[in-house]
Length: 366
Image 1 (cartoon, rainbow, N blue to C red):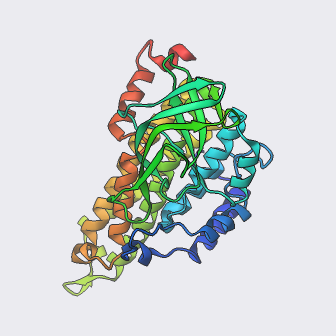
Image 2 (image 1 turned 30 degrees about the vertical axis):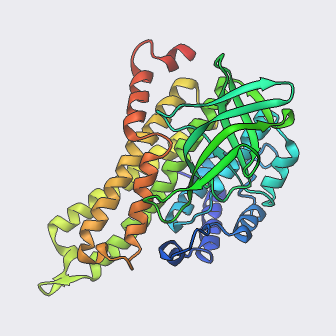
């Protein structure tokens, strides 16, 4: 049942896929850009015009289940646009009551904002609260879309363990962004160093731990959805390739071993999609244990399944798959990067064990 989507969601998929088809340019990912970013502002504005950036705002009526479909299409197209992350920022600003004007400008595409959250295992950003706002110190090693953003929504903690969300101008005082050379060539990542960066009172707030949890869970789910889209594209192209590639006078797709590999790829894509869509729906209203379980499944099972699809696609393409000119390696790089961002599968398996074991933290919270 989790795979079933509404007619409106089917229309959303069709609209986003057609829109991205006119803007996908994987040649830019291969090109020497001399430090230039991949994100084009006209594309951000166009996405906002379609209502994608403000999708989760209460007045729009969109859901995480809808946004996961958008994220899947972004992955399928190999798009550099951090639309899903910007949409999450809009929603979190609303929940935290932070700078409604900035949220409007983000939703309209005038400004691009992305979350800046410590990866599991990284030290969190430290926030010191005062009447003049929140003073932030720390380093975020991997911020997807961080080098192109105008605003950063930073998740921080105080020395008393309070969760803080702070909206910062990306080029403001005390902020240093460094574009990172990454395995993924289709998206931009940045290291963000905060050294006494100040978020004004109207741009910072102490939030309930549940709000912070929603931010972390949403990033995990939509990152996995991106990987599902990329894996689905690789499955489609691999099946087409083995139908056309001939050896010993027949299509290699007629060989039993190749059929088995293709079937395993299809099963992995289907299971990953099922897992991600179930997690996205849990974000929209699941109880604590259910949501924690489904998000952990998406972060472990779905990410690993997509990585297997990418590896098998490379093998079934043979020597063709290893060439620089072929798109396959771009999708493989994207999927492997998604596997590691917002928590590795190992991290999410540990989280799942914590949920399922009697007396685990999620069960106590419930």
